[in-house]
Image (cartoon, rainbow, N blue to C red; front, side, top):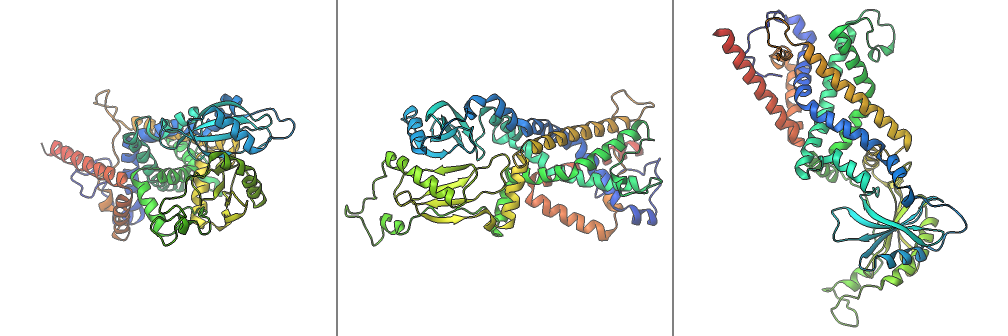
Length: 483
């Protein structure tokens, strides 16, 4: 894409007429943008696709490789939750108990979660307990809201930052940010190409490659058709992936806060607890200004049975996690877990002393955008529809790899074959695309690019880089012609 055209006209392509410009104003712009983004950004998208394919099936792989921790033989009655937690605490007496995830299915283990200072951010130590015998079967580190075990966490981080830490997240953000731009530009090109075919007699013409083509044309047809097949899913993956990114994610978070689209949460403050526990307030305990002592953990553990019963009686019927408060005046928060095949995240707050539900938040009461964000993340993680979700994502990632490989093959076949070095590369589309675009279309495109570049900085910076490369190439070619 070029704002100023310093290169001479292409000898193979006559100057566009007013009729051609009016009819094809968007086409050359989409072609040039698709070309540069495809050449320079596609490697990052390729890495994201390959690691994403692994990430898509990692929940199922985890269920197989960690079967001994996750599954037990169902027989008899489950032991009280407090008894299961007591057994787990005995194995980790030096760690702080923070949560419990009761066995969601008859053959699942119970997870007892501890805060471990030696672990990283969002990581916790989990002791897995057989709910029928109240005996621990093992322990491991779990990560994030889905409780991923180390193997799935390793794949997650490979997909997110290539195990390079915060600097590595630039790769995934660049891929997610540009994926929708490349896809939509490709859609414009594909519609234009398919409309030029003969014998279009059904609505399926966009989905069908032209089998009569050979060579580069055959590659282009399959490149476009497969791209259309996978486009709805990759656009969703691009949007949800950006919510996790560093720079674009910050803009998205700020936007959600301004529009009240953030994820709500139940209040765990018990009635009257704020006044009693406020050191500077008008009400103080009999001991003076000192805060009440933390409640003994055995007492909290004993309250778990009543808390869990009250939560289930108030709509928490799916697999859940119970946050165990360490301080007085705080209720237990019981929230449904992000698990395979779950669609809601209901939550309640329960007073551990009385077993009374003090606050309740049904998923139906979430803002619609918060719901859509949650569902999108569930889908991105391969958890929304279980194995079917994972297989769909795997197929889409394979399709994306095919599209990228065909794109590079087309670029290679576009290279000059006469009087050129064997290392010659494919030619770029004709320059001056933006100048050829009608003003009524060019101005909104430039405005949109500025807005996107501001809110998605990596797109803006890389787009400036493309423009810089384009201008330099034009200057070099211009000098060669005039020399």
